[in-house]
Length: 105
Ligand SMILES: O=C(O)C(=O)C[C@]1(C(=O)O)C=C[C@@H](O)C=C1
Image (cartoon, rainbow, N blue to C red; front, side, top):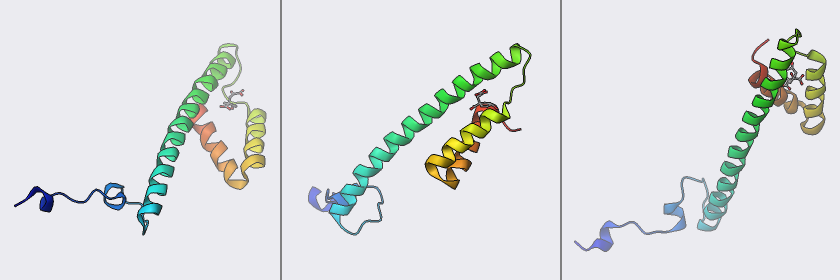
């Protein structure tokens, strides 16, 4: 048996992960765009973790000074900001960020 028969052809469609595309061109474009999305997601997660750390500093300072962990008027500002920029789903995103940053209330 020759090696040629046992090796799959190295085309874009066979090399790419499942993209759902129906042409090598579309598969290539989708694979490149998915790499950018993976990179953006990694940066977004890093920013969320940075936000959590900054929020923890604020909360610790307020608690140590005798205040409360939560500041609802500030949370309303943040929710409004996200809603203004992203619409209704922005509110849900901000609520998730707040929960990640200060836990459930
Ligand atoms: O801005 C503050 O005062 C914070 O404590 C930060 C933060 C936030 O993560 O955005 C966290 C808890 C508060 O309830 C409000 C906002």
